[in-house]
Amino acid sequence: MTIRSVKWTEAEGDIRRIRETVFIKEQNVPEELEWDGLDPDCAHVLAYDEDGEAVGTGRLRADGHIERMAVLEEWRGRGIGDRLLHKLLDLAREKGFSRVTLWAQTHAIPFYERHGFQAVGGEFMDAGIPHREMQVSLDNPG
Image (tube, rainbow, N blue to C red; front, side, top):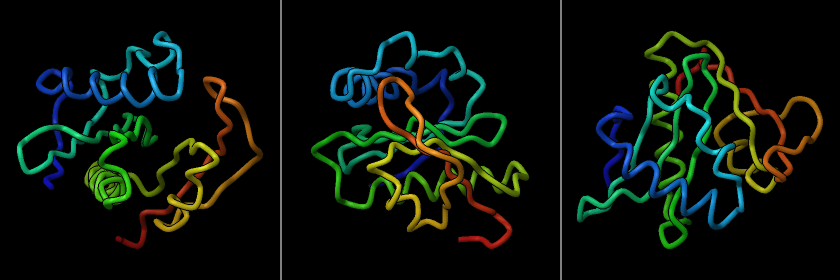
């Protein structure tokens, strides 16, 4: 498994395929919400299997917000999400962010808590899915 930082212009096809599968097909997120026009201005990461197939992705917005983390169903439970998140946090540190935020689907809160994120505020709906805002300080690496 390899995790790489990629540009939207070079990896758009792989990123779209994963997010369409996970968010649009599995979770019924409307296409117009998924494709928000922000991708060209974001830093992206992709997870590749041993055959070079992209199996997971995530993005870091220019404001330090992590989002669109997705791993194809058959690859879940193998630590790929952990590695994607670590790479995104490393990118955030490189860009000088001292704090990162994200909107976690409520079922994923324990995953982010394991990485030091803390929930703030109440539950809210985004694309018909319950979420909570979460934050982590990047002052302490790791």
